[in-house]
Image (cartoon, rainbow, N blue to C red; front, side):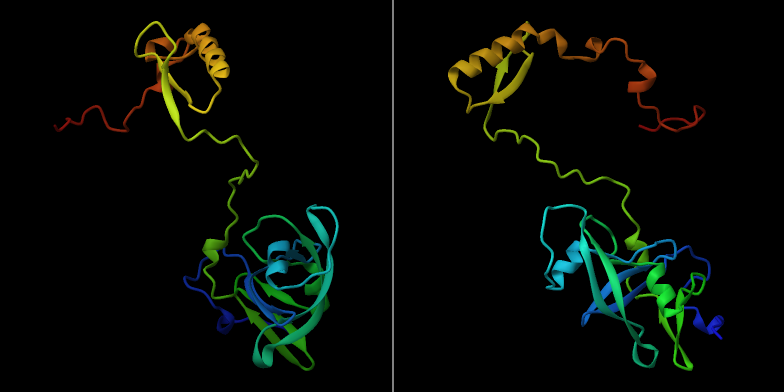
Length: 227
């Protein structure tokens, strides 16, 4: 019978919302940052991790799903270790984890996971093995909601020069010095014809609510300012 008690707790402080993250040995490589996800219907191995392990065998176009591979995977250490073949779906996406271990493997192990104790237990013959949370700082593994946009964008030229495009001598902008003379003349003429679309001062920014562009300090009006 698999049970959990106070001795299985491996965290501090006692209240937490940490994910269950362990380390495993895959094809003789120790892999950290393995997320135990009971809501996943597949075992996910990320392409970057796959390549670091020196494993090859996939071919074809660059798509998110690179293929599937079955690798021997060991859970736990010492007397608590248990090895089994795990079928991984290899995907080429960025992630904070190296592997996501889903229900297929957890069911195959007969594993029971306690997120409260951050401990996973599974039968080994007549005994019970276990895998505790990894020593990696789990708080650093939360997925970053920001999108890393790696699309190629035009790069600005290194050498620039100022040109006047408005009625006022201060109405200047910068253009690249590598332009051909004809291109430069055409660009300057175009900018001069449309100089009025630029906001040269706050007065030119018509139709914008001052509450939107003004900064207000969160200070009580009753407080006296100090010079």
